[in-house]
Length: 191
Ligand code: S3P
Image (cartoon, protein in one colour):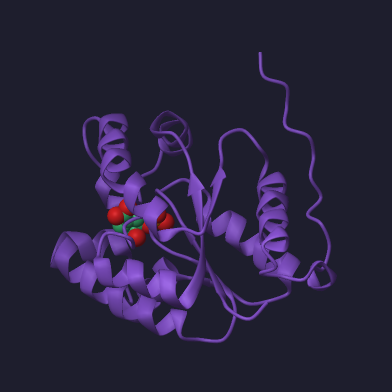
């Protein structure tokens, strides 16, 4: 693998969880944009949103993204809003291989209904908010990504294997360099 692999998608899509396992399979470092920002800020993103506002956060997000994307090959989990700025979208497209973890607002709501960390979802009707975010951002994720993986019911291991398969088919990675297939259990039957 010769480039950074970036994961984009909405909050709750599994970018960090899937990214960590993908990096393990590819035997490369895992980087998390939000975690690096929090480390630089010395405070949580939620708190920074409250004190400095979203625009200040987006400035820091942009400069951290352009820094991480220029580093040696790694798997990079981005934040859900990283695709909002045109500059970020072109950085992601031109300097990394972008995978979009796509989900429905209903599925995201199911996963995030107890979340208290994500500032944008601390509203009266988080499902409605997730629908608005989807409407606004789905086209941005799509125009930025080279690969799209529908999340939903599959386990993390299954998702990782789906991504590995797409990357292999497109010759982005060499099958011989994959440490091992993630141990995929079949998804539970749906009623
Ligand atoms: C945001 C998503 C968050 C974080 C910040 C803003 C967004 O990341 O970057 O709270 O605009 O959707 P996750 O996608 O990891 O929740």
